[in-house]
Length: 150
Image 1 (cartoon, rainbow, N blue to C red):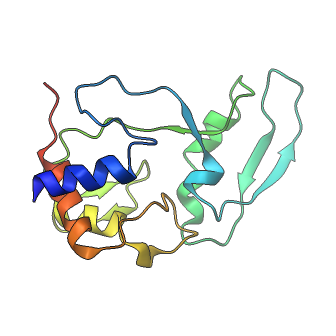
Image 2: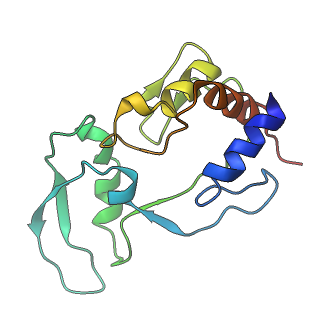
């Protein structure tokens, strides 16, 4: 099942995440709007470069608080893309909460990963990248549980 999960992961997830848990993680920022399509911020203050504008999330998506941790980052001295770098996906076995705000939670690692990758969460949810086939989703969860750095 782990080899099936690796194959599905490589086909679906390596646009953002590294294929090898031992490879350096890219510092590329994935735009926040791509990570959370329901995000529709309100502009609080316009600032001149190199500062970013100050915005607040007042959206009505599935998880409006998902943006809260990004507010300080967004108000920082940078006018770059607002978003996150993809995390290293290694040593996940034993984790039961995922995403930067821990909003995906399961009784076990497998449960939580299945929830994270389940398309029933909807296209507007945070991290809207899913594995549609339940068998493939379970295989990816097993593969992710097996990944370690070497």
